[in-house]
Length: 111
Image 1 (cartoon, one colour):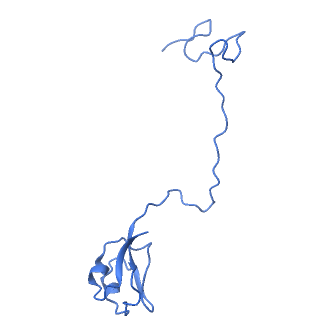
Image 2 (cartoon, helix red, strand yellow):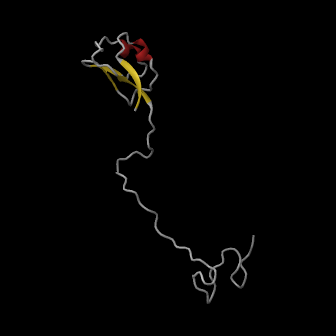
Image 3 (cartoon, rainbow, N blue to C red):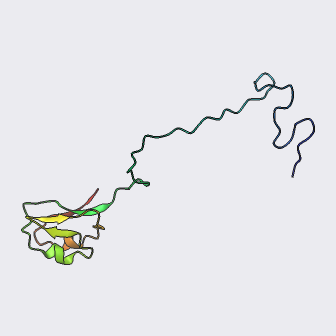
């Protein structure tokens, strides 16, 4: 490990006695400032979510609420009201419901 010399040169050397932090002596002073702080809401997620593929009811007029998609969904992401309602947080975009819908009401989309 390199030791600091008496004249102040070497690893970890300061400016030394009689020297000032200016550029006339060829020494530039380091300026430290606090890191910038972003205005992030308190409830914001720590990770920004990427877009992902999920099933959607692309043609609500075609959905007759037959329940085939509800029975097919392995994640129980679909419920029936007047039409199928798909929870995008539960849906993993596997497309099984889209393939089994006889009426073409469902489609995959990126959200």
